Image 1 (cartoon, rainbow, N blue to C red):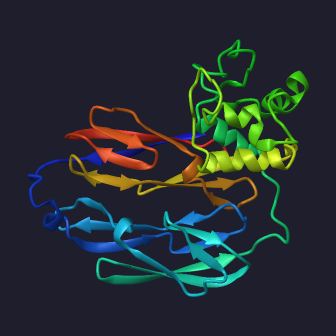
Image 2 (cartoon, rainbow, N blue to C red):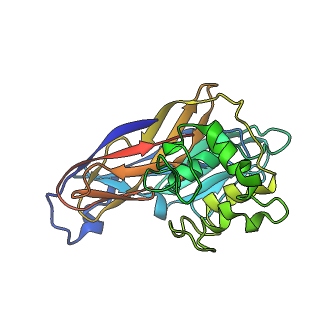
Image 3 (cartoon, rainbow, N blue to C red):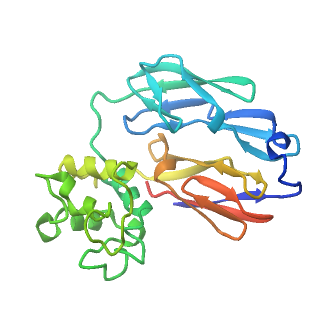
Amino acid sequence: MSRLLCFTLVASLPLAGRAADLAPVSVAVSPAAIDIRHHRQPFAIQVLGQSADGYSIDLAPGATFTPADPKVVRIDGKGLVVPLTSGQTKVTVAAGGKSFDVAVTVALPAAEPPTSFRHEVMPVLSKAGCNAGACHGYSLGKNGFKLSLRGADADADFANIRHEFAARRVNFHSPASSLLLTKSRGEVPHDGGARFSRDSLMSKILSRWVEDACPSDLADKGEVVAVRVTPATLALRPGDRHKLRLVAEYTDGRQRDVTALAIFSANNDRFASVDDIDFQALRIGDSRATDQDQQ
């Protein structure tokens, strides 16, 4: 599923003295409340500021996030709200001389769910570019390994990874030695080079899946029915950066922060660029960021 969102990039003032010019006159926090129902699905809190002349300011890097009950959630190094146990609490956000409370409800299943092939492994393969047309998503595959283009056929991809050639791509006796991991991390020769590092979220997801003997959830027909990016509109000056956040809504009504596994790109890289989840203005003009979520 993809969606186009417009980001307005404007430059009308000199860059000198930018910090003073961009002192926030308004501050908002998004979302106002968080509902977490999965051990491995943290949520991000955005702190959005606006200058007197209408420019957007990402205040999250300088904000403080304090959970009222550190036994229920913790805040990791990237500012994500990570669930620890079921319960209700709040996270106090302080930024721009103001304070906000974000209500947090955590309702975790009794046991941590196994890694989902559909909703975790497939997005990793897409974000890493493994199923792109220039790689294994090519109609004939690459070097004997074929994936469906952009993850269009989860059933076929599962069979090719888990069963093809006597499961040579996964090693249940030594998961870390699996070709699925070592090639993606660039630890053995791979025409596509390293796609992610060993300590990345993508590596952790694939490692956990192989350690669990590659469980299948192909029967799970849950799909994404809507996605929402915040902020929906940005007004930036050349050189300014702002993080994006993507939340997906599923057929069963649950919502999930999928920012870390989504793919963002700018439709016109003359005016803007997207580095992972950081949207950066390059020069005066308009650009749009496309988010592609295949959860």
